[in-house]
Length: 263
Image (cartoon, rainbow, N blue to C red; front, side, top):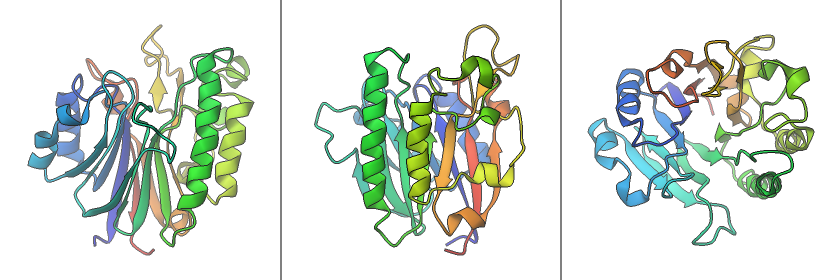
């Protein structure tokens, strides 16, 4: 196994719409593991050949038009599990997990929720509760666990451009924060804040509208959270804001965490 391992996460907002950008970025950066969200494509239409040509094995859990998650890895991947335990055949495709390099990787696309008074926010709360129960079971294993993806939640005031204006709105609501607190009780740590405790104006998502990116009106809603001992082995954590500044980008920037081998 490599002495260092780089794990990336990216909500690509349609793998087919942004395939050239994804291919270019993966070719340049070469993360050992890449977790994708919002692929918006059936498994049969996922660009397997492109990833294979770059040396990646892929595990996918896709859906037409909406949702969809995938894990691409340069390293061997085992014990792939798709979905939450009670997901039916018609369930939303939002979770995929695999063991890679001795780490249980869980790739998640948490619902946005639309608005606080929307049934979609109720669904978001239900999903977060089910995800918490799922992670409790995952934590019963002996491997360190890494949960990455589009959480659609900014954890703290420092993670949004205007906490006063945005407080108790979607993606920055106390009900969402309570679920993050439950994840912390399971032992999950946000290594970005370990390495950047006071870092301000560091976001991973900017709305397409109203020049939000140009004005840096963003949210840090994409995350890589880990359990011990990975929390102490993370040596670098990057938000690739440059990739967000493309002609036709996803509204999310890729994020990357580098870990030294010691688990």
